[in-house]
Image 1 (cartoon, helix red, strand yellow):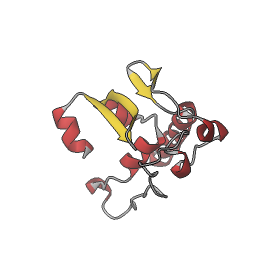
Image 2 (image 1 turned 90 degrees about the vertical axis):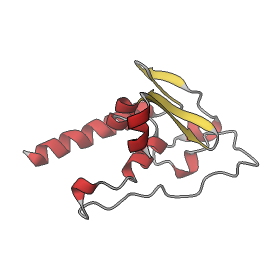
Image 3 (image 1 turned 45 degrees about the vertical axis):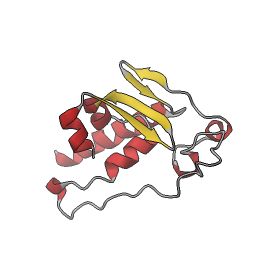
Image 4 (image 1 turned 90 degrees about the horizontal axis):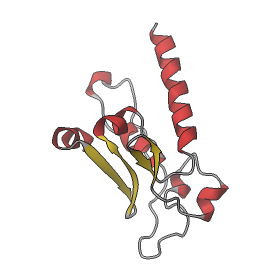
Length: 126
């Protein structure tokens, strides 16, 4: 529950299948997640301010078998941003932006899409 985390911590580690996939401040995670799994978690949180206007977006697919962990990115089978590189090797947790780490080869694509969606939302609101 990210709401509880926000009240108790300044930084967050997001884990998927035993791997840390993102590390950042609570505010940075909420404002601009840099890993598709984190984005999926945020999209699946019910928002009282939207009522029933917006449906929750589930994370499709199944998690990997933890008894036989994959050698590639464990989120690749469920990720709409996955590329060939994601299926070949597991990305390390690296600094993406100031104080914000992610284990995603394609985090820049995720940022670009979020910026585009945000700009569209602002234009519709005006």
